[in-house]
Length: 423
Image 1: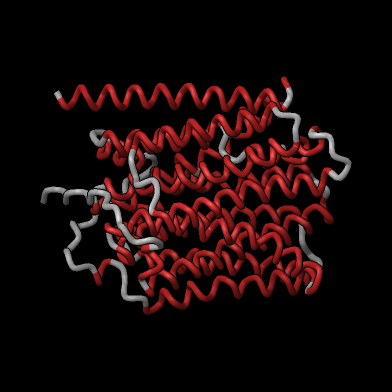
Image 2: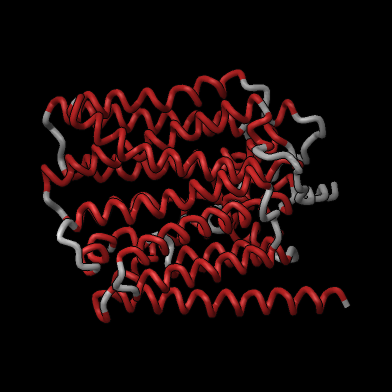
């Protein structure tokens, strides 16, 4: 059987097109609550870990354990979504999230938390995320269809950003009002709306009009990774977008967030804690503004060259943030960086998903997730370890400059290669 033709990306003239689907509204809300609960758990569990162990190594392990499952297991999670019902895989992820929250609560309540308990739960939390994300992106195609795909992906990014904004605030409030034990128990409830709705939601393989190609068995070891790369190697758009997402995550990612307290202190304010919070909030607010503005005005339809330009502008914003000693400029740079980050990220994801062959779309989404999320585990090398040698300002600036040069080179290669194949 020959592979099915990939869906071409289609633009919609409607603002907030994904929200015009009743199921889309419920789905986006459920994903927002799940992301909020994810961040609430971070707030409460990280606080208890700090209070009980005062271990920088365990705090560092918390970051590594969050991203390395995406690096090693994203493509296998995508392959599972190709072979089985993505609704059930998402539900497994949600139940694993909730189970981890409940396990934290039991250990807090009995005062029996040990360092190895924390390490295991942090790993399981990361595994829940890698089960959730590829299947969640795959299911979007069934809910909104190709015409409203970019809107749905952009709104998914916006809903998750909203969850990231609300999570720390609500988590801090729950920590104060309920305490860590009952707060973490209550947090498990936020995973239920999406889990329960997916039980009877009329989406997934058996509801698709066109029969899917017979699923291919999952290869062992890294065979599935190499097989997926081989299958998409002739698709210039997918290859360039996966490479671009991987470079951005590897070189910068979100490594600046771990260094943000020092950036805030170096900007010369006495109340560095408040300035630190505002810098983080500005980055998240920029992303939220991007989702609302771009959707309301139907701006920036998915285009490979536009994606490259947005990444290069993001590099400029990050470079300005790195070298400025004026707090207002730093705050504005973070706002712009957040706007550009969501803009290029959602466009990149749209292009990958819409050009992926339907019979291996889950695997391709997993490959993109492996590059764009998994490689963030190493972004601390360029910004963090580099900062220990030459200072965080220069390390972030040079990282942004390196990414800018590599993005320009990748754009030139993609355009040249495309023209060469067109002849």
